[in-house]
Image (cartoon, rainbow, N blue to C red):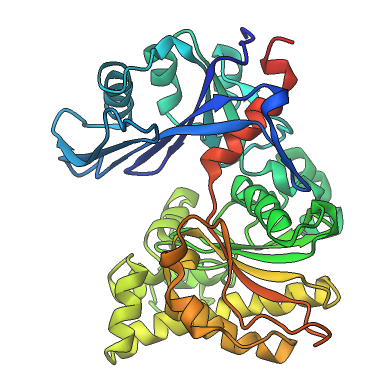
Length: 433
């Protein structure tokens, strides 16, 4: 690994199944850091880019330069030459150099979000040696190395934030000799998001991170909940894989473990007759539960906004899917309130659905009134987009002083790209003194 100068730039890359989100940051010198009770802010955002519809061309390319000149900015431009993630990244690099007038050689480090870190505790530089040991590493990494050969590609893991989960919560009640040999335990995911949210709420409250107890809802196509005690992950809904916990766009979430065998047997109903069994491969079962379940299986769409709209129009099946999601969320909120002994500073909505769904926030907020939360402020909940600059917004009726109400209902606009760049900038091993 080659160490970099703090005058260089950091690129954060977040690859989805058919999308690519990229943010470019300037690394600040320690004397320029903005500091708060949440810690230092060592990077400054220079530009953002997003490429969507990669798997269903033409891809849509957007590029926003945050400098006053807005050099190179485009929105929703159709690019026929983008066929996959590698060509999408190559187009971004070409646009960066030619249209935004930024020297690609100034990019010192490329940060990659990796879902599963396995036994890795810290960010890892991607090399020939480490590439094959990082589970489910994005295939984009080799192309980033090729397009920006002078930059280090570094893997940042979603599982790292959850290493504080106590062993009795992370362990499964199975043969522990097998479990330890094969790494069968709760890892948890969305950790980069939770880390960002924790610091954002710390700044909102003007309280140190290690004084905060939160229940954070990261709700999107993949959804999870995290109980944070004294600034550390205590429990989370996802487990060994992201399949457990809340349902998602195509994931089942938590189910009876034997359901898949009854789902696929020859009888087409619950049967313990061994003659009704079929040879079900693990990969087939995983495909059914990961890709053919969730609200898509209930309604035919992965678009939660459409589900909410159709439910409001009276569709019973869409209302059922909406209610099911709310019910599963409430299961975790109730459970985590007990685990935190009722000492919860806030319930925090985040993720694509958490940040956008007025109806979902309202439904959940009404149900948690019994736990001592104030009523939802309808105006704040419905006009959240009017305050796009704020990272954290309170959407409840603000409690009066001495009211006894300490818990708030908040929305946080999470930013995993910023979190990776921040962690990268603070890792001394990546930089010259």
